[in-house]
Image (cartoon, rainbow, N blue to C red):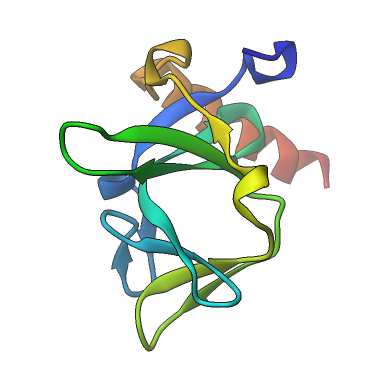
Length: 123
């Protein structure tokens, strides 16, 4: 794992809300409608309260592989079909081992709460 990812935490897609529900099972597609996979989770940076990567599940049940897609890429949630469309191609997918990133914890939640309070009071 790259050193800048040490502060990242994994959060399951079922725990990430958006206006139409959660990210669980949401498809990731390219702008040309090519299917890339389903969102399995996100990597967040708790202190910044920011999603850094989408974790994309690809393949069948027994051959599932996980990949990362940078959340800095242009991404659009299409309300009509419930898919996220991204700007890019398959080369931008980076293989991901879920064991390489800790899960989001109660300590991370506390860090997130106090980081946002500190940012608000500094403004």
